[in-house]
Length: 70
Image (tube, rainbow, N blue to C red; front, side, top):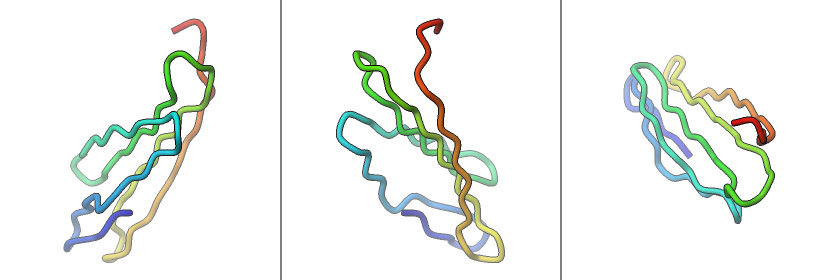
């Protein structure tokens, strides 16, 4: 959950699913939360980007499967 304080976005809470952890990366005009799966299991990583637009949180998300090549 995020909230807008003026033009800034702030994290209120993040609840990763079982087997995932969350990493928060503040950026200038956005907040990026990466939900990463356990390294010992093949899975999906999800990146959620939150921004404030006219005082309202807006979101975009991207997911990717894990890769053996990394």
